[in-house]
Image (tube, rainbow over all chains, first blue to last red; front, side, top):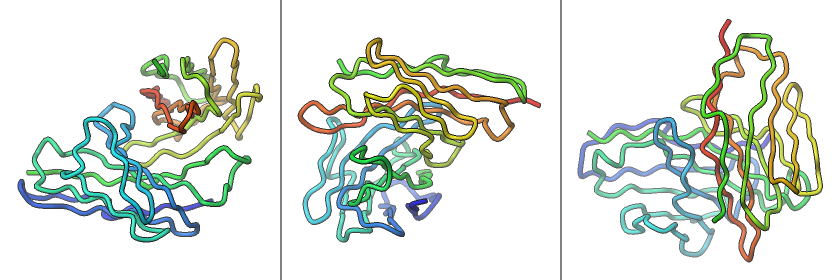
Length: 121
Length: 113
């Protein structure tokens, strides 16, 4: 099946530093990728939609200057948490939508990365 | 308001038993409904995707049903295994003018030996 790779899978950083998380689609091209955060025992919360070659679209309440998204190629999107604080500690997950539908026609099948656990001290 | 509600919130069953997870949604219009399995500390993995015209879809021991009239879906797990312990997330694709996935909070299933 389609593979989406996230790196790093876990990271610990000091408060005030910036952390970059990568999301790569390994065997397909994706113009659109999505970033989520997930708190313990809660479901995924969409943070932003990443579009290759254009600005990301952020969900209401998500600070675009805090969570920088860059989608420089059809296989790579990055999320940078700037000036991280302990409250930014969370599980960050990306998903990618293949440009060519792999599942049932027109369903917009998504493939998720394995997630990146960020701990800010 | 477009919402997806899942029940129960958590469930414990014995290995080998069957179980059914519920998903009620108010998303309208919608294109499809998905069930994902998420192991702890991992990303979600797709189990089934059903369009509004489909009533049932199976994937091994997982069978999903969809009633678009009552806006209900269920995920039935047959002959549960320890590896079925995970969160199961119901997701509905809202298609009213723009596409947006609406996530349920998930059901946390624990299968005990």
